[in-house]
Image (cartoon, rainbow, N blue to C red; front, side):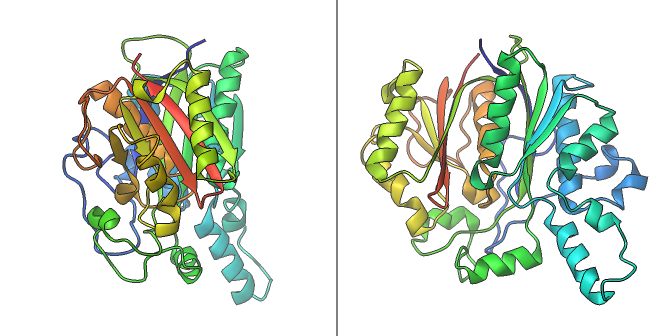
Length: 354
């Protein structure tokens, strides 16, 4: 059975939402935190509901509705999301009020909406969708876990037109904490020059990306999602290379068959070490692309990479802003996405032309 990506939508730190040019006008930031460029939510959500929704819920709901609109689908067969941090804004609000109100007379809204599955639940409530609804909270593999669950549902004929999303937000509190842990650069810099600055730390990000996957072939499909694989804490860079080769072999391919490799480089010396090693070994003759200088680093950022790969294949163009080296095939037919989060959670995705 073949799995297809029918449509894809994302809200990110770039102009990527709705009917906009495909990354021809990259937005430059001079800081270590990239904030999502948000649309006018009134076009997607009842204004009476917006005021009760936190940042991540609005991003997730709007992106999901845009994804369905692009596909021409009113009701998905299932809704599956992945998030590592969940609804941080509501969680912080609730905890703050516990202290401020001395644990008495607490407003319940922030608590109710602080759970990780709130985004998937709100989408279902708005659509009146009573189908399968699930949320994965698997740290750096949250979105990939959601995708694998959706693929199993399709193969078991349990659902079709499955809405799969990855969402994470960055709040002032979480940014401060992660900065103290040394995850981000110490000094502001241009995100478009991220890979030229060899130093410790990366830039923080946030966003929401949804794809609608189906097993029905159509000329309207963006791409084929050929395979997804995850692995945890590889023993060495050589082990990573072996796993990538094994992944390709399982799909009757070798590295020469891949037209473009999208990697999860984020500008941090330690994080990028495995990518640098592969660039001089397995990927030595490959066309390479990066994406985290556009959306920032966050646990489900690979959902942005899948949106990017799907659009590259459908539009038959590789945006200049993502290219790392000379692109040999300007209209790639097979794209490999390799990403890891903190060198613990590794994933591989193979996206092909339909």
